[in-house]
Length: 565
RNA sequence: GCGACUGUAGUCUAGUGGUUAGGACCGGGGCUUCCCAAGCCUCUAACCCGGGUUCGAAUCCCGGCAGUCGCACCA
Image (cartoon, rainbow, N blue to C red; front, side, top):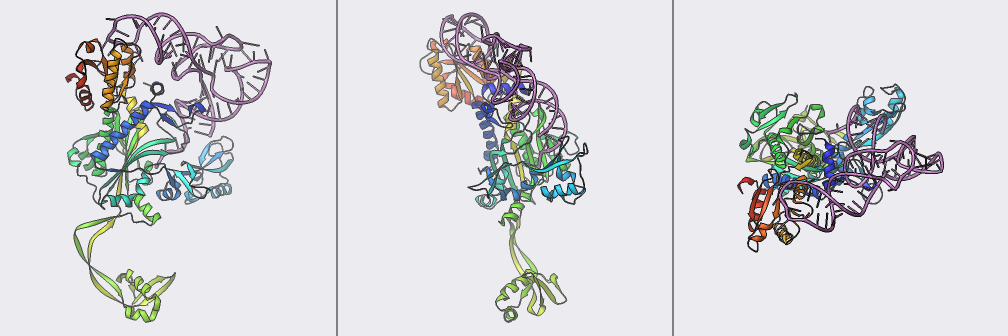
């Protein structure tokens, strides 16, 4: 198939539309139409079901506009800013810091003026045509705005939802009664001012993410549910590039996947994607190479799906280590660590310095308390030649050992503080959305079917009168109202021939169609009459009593076999 | 951001200086006891935007926007 056919269907039938089309459109932005909006919700519902109901994680929702401090701490201010310089002749763009990498130890730290100065000083020319280079310009991939009136408080549209979870860690940690592991999920929009959005919905400027941040004890990366799935297999492409099918146990024992919890969530991602309708035969997990890994990641695996565009990343499952929390702790001065209680409080003996307050008082007067604190912060190892050197108000102070003594103290320790590690399965919703459609797309002799899994289908049942006459319409409308009242997404259609109506429903992935015919009317009044239920994938039909219809459809939705109803 | 190609109803497309801008599919209305896009009648609906050349531009030129592909980018 080609992506154009599918995108045309999506546009025609109301899955997605290019945004702002009447004004010429904006690259990298799409609107979800009525069917697309429903499909997107269904994808989010499965993700939420797996993580919130299934794993007991908690969900939050945080702002898309964040103050600059968040991204200073997260590293995005640096990582997202590139200085670009263009050749005046051939117009070829170059990363300015790359051009001066031989001339400066740390070109990343230079600003535009410094970069330009360095290039002028060393007569750096265009590497392609040796011509003169233009001015150095900053290109930042984050959308900038200002918060409040005036422009002195910078804000940025978030490039990922993750930071909203990290900055809330202290609240979430208390919410979870100060226990690990702690799983938090958030879905929403993210923004990246891509230089060149391409390939339909694959690279967008405004996009949807479903992110999961699991905070774990850095010394315990096991997972309670792991044993149940240990022998399940995954199609893996490790760092060395050699694809192989391994069980989770094999992957861990061979050191292919870094730890148990990461392995479990890679497997969970596989089941999640397959439940959404991603074809398992077109799904693999590829390990990031060292140089492709994000600035924060310790190990990272991408779930990749085969699309008409080629292998495409849809989920990234990263072990971010303690990077994010450490960064926010350092920049905000907030406590972001976990107090890890020992099973039994430990008694430890420690040799410490104890200030002699009696001596210090007369010597230092009002500052004695401060000096005592400085002494007691140090240990016996800091004493040399009978003198302890401490720094006070920027000056060095020598304290003779007459002013303190060395004592052995016994302490009871209930636990220790550790910085949690973060396991992050991050899902590209728009890419999953497109994959679900492309993997469901079937076309034979100009007849198109979207074989969406029933759970994904925007419409669960089409309801038709065989013909729009003889009271069939009234009866069909009653059936439609019944299904709607039962919470089943239904669609009423009486136009054109019955075959055309089936075809219309097939094209948008509706799994079943219900038809009221003359037999329905001949049977008893009320809801005793029967209707035909037609299955999209087999095009077989069964007669079902109207009164049983909601129950029957609900069991089909849960996976019952159509042939057995 | 660069280069090549492209842009006509909702969709696919014909039209290469003067056309009431043609067709097909879809969609709306109607006819046909009609269970897998049947048929017939009928209706709606388009030259991406802005400049320029010309008596006259969908058509030629320039710019913008958008798309496809390649380069670059892709924490």
